[in-house]
Image 1 (cartoon, one colour):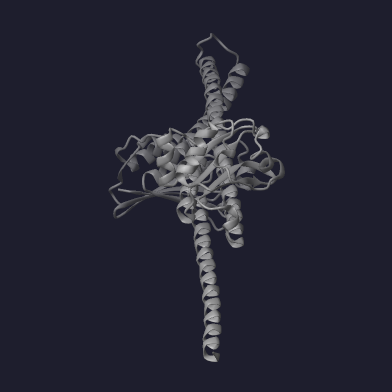
Image 2 (tube, rainbow, N blue to C red; image 1 turned 135 degrees about the vertical axis):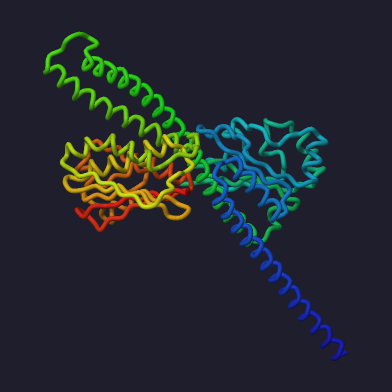
Length: 443
């Protein structure tokens, strides 16, 4: 009897240990699965920027990982009275049953404040759990139909979690299980709450991105509209002032000619400013089309220098040239390279050099052409270097020397050079020590 009693006691202890180990292993498995899910959701939130693609990936990942019958996301309107379906993932069993009954769960739900299941989710900001699958869809889907669907798909519990960010409910995350909510362990319940927070933050980021993208689109449209309108007016003025100087409107006094000359110069600056803004916008959107052909860089540089030499001499500057090598033929968009790269860099050197020399160099480096413009001007500080070639980026000295600078010239130049698989950069020893701008293009 003692031996039998001893063996029985040992069996109970072993059973207790076995059960404890089983529970620990089960909890560990759930923890590992949850951590893996949170990592996946984090990756999704980084890679997916728009709400619908993000929502689709989230619901599919959550349902597959946690083996739920349904995971769905509804987004609330501004009033909080309507829920619009964003993304849904159904188990194969539930999907087949829904198709059999002709029942779509992705429908608009109205009158949230009158829905007993949804109302507390929005008003109290707490999750709600229902044993009846149709509670959330009450008023939107026939109750008998959805009850039959739940029975057919073995759905036991449906939970709704508020997707809250900064006390604002963006929508509701719906989770349907084939077991009762109370059967979930405390850790599983807490894990679900954690993933709800991650989903809410990811959706909020996607919402902000979408709003920003739409705002940028409207802003770009407005910029193009205004710029084109202003460009039209300035072009008309330019033609008028040029006509006055050419005598198209009869004889004019010297005072009128002086005023017309000044107005014509300012108008041309205005046209160039508008064109810079338009070009920068088009480059940013990637709508610029390049017409590539072979041309001699040396000839193009010579033409630009001939145009700019008078401006340099007017300021008392020496404009020197230097070439090394013979072949300077590149395949690129000649107009873009000439107007926005070569002319821009030489023009900048003249503007930002109060006195001294500007040297324009062209060098053949095997399979590349190196174009450079060296000046003895205001130089570039380390702080200003960070802003070079950025959209609207202007240095402190550049603003002082050239107050009308838009800050788009170097940005446009870089976009064009990059598009031609080239390289553009600047070097300077600091403020007041001049600078050299380099452009490298493949032969």
